[in-house]
Image 1: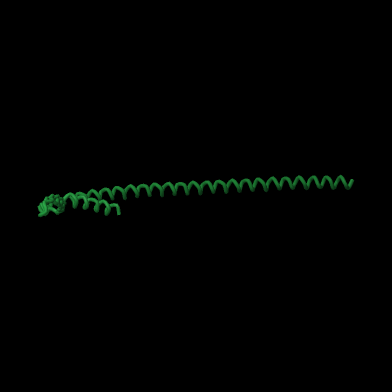
Image 2: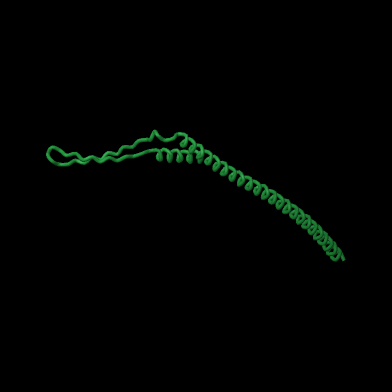
Length: 136
C-alpha cells in the first residue's frame, strides 16, 4: 500500500513537471472606442520531453520505493520476532513460577498434615490420662 502511494506521488510530480502553462493577454478596441482585455491560459504537455529521462526517473523512484518497502518489512519482521521471543520467555517464566507455587503448596500441605497428626496424637494421650484419672 505504501509503495503504491509513493509511486503515485512520483508519477504526479513527473506529470506536473512536464506540463507547461502559458498566459496570453490580448486587448481589443471595440467600435464604440472602449477597450476589452482578454486573458487566456494555455496548458500543454510538452511532447519534446525526452521520454527516456522520464522512464529512468520512474524506474529510480520505483527502485527507491521498493527498497523503502523492504526496509519497512524487515523492521516489522524483526519487531515481531522480538515480541514472539519475549512472549515465549514470559510464558516459560510463568510456568516455572506456577510449578514453584505448586511444589511449595504441596510442602505446606504435608507439613499441615504432619502437625495435625501430632496434635491428634497428643489429644489422644491427654484423653487417656483423663480417663485413667477418672477411673482412680
